[in-house]
Picture 1 (cartoon, rainbow, N blue to C red):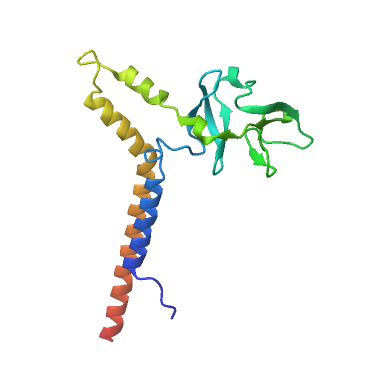
Picture 2: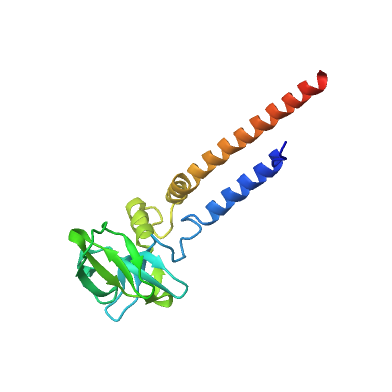
Length: 190
């Protein structure tokens, strides 16, 4: 019989995987430039809002969030290339030196490689949420309910699915260990 991992080792691995996922979640990366993050790109034209679609070691490529920024040269080298092959909208790819994003009607744009020091996370979503829920009582302070709401949203979105998965894995590991133990104790009684 092949010696498989012990229940304790399996549980340790499940917990380590859980911790890794939580550490990489949006609450942990709220100040980190990652794909999918809403960011502000600093330029001579002011700050441009966008979403990170590609990250490299010293640069990132950012797509527009506001339609009016689609033509801006801060985010793009060239826009509206016509593709020969069929493209799926919003697909991002690189030819090794340039990064592209597919658009509607089989067109694509060449994204600008923006140095990371010109990109910062966009806190506007948090500011909007605070403004929507601010009370007149001590308006300069974030109320406790607002804070709880923000943290609760992060937990529901980022942690809850992984917590449920860890509980299910733990249950499976414990049940398998108990079943294996009962089977072995039954073997000794014979």
